[in-house]
Length: 27
Image 1 (cartoon, rainbow, N blue to C red):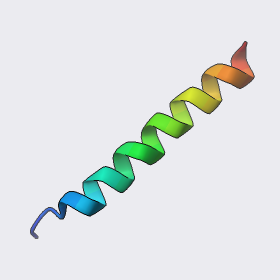
Image 2 (image 1 turned 30 degrees about the vertical axis):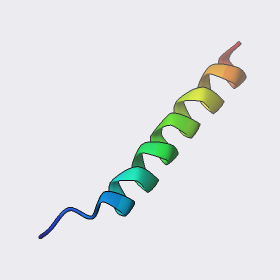
Image 3 (image 1 turned 90 degrees about the vertical axis):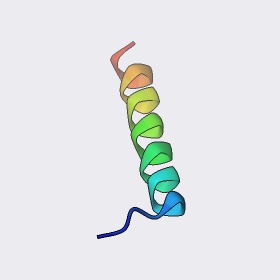
């Protein structure tokens, strides 16, 4: 399985978005 830089970027964006959303809702 070859890691696709674009796929990695998408996952990174999703993780960052989820974390920021969680932080917003928590506060």
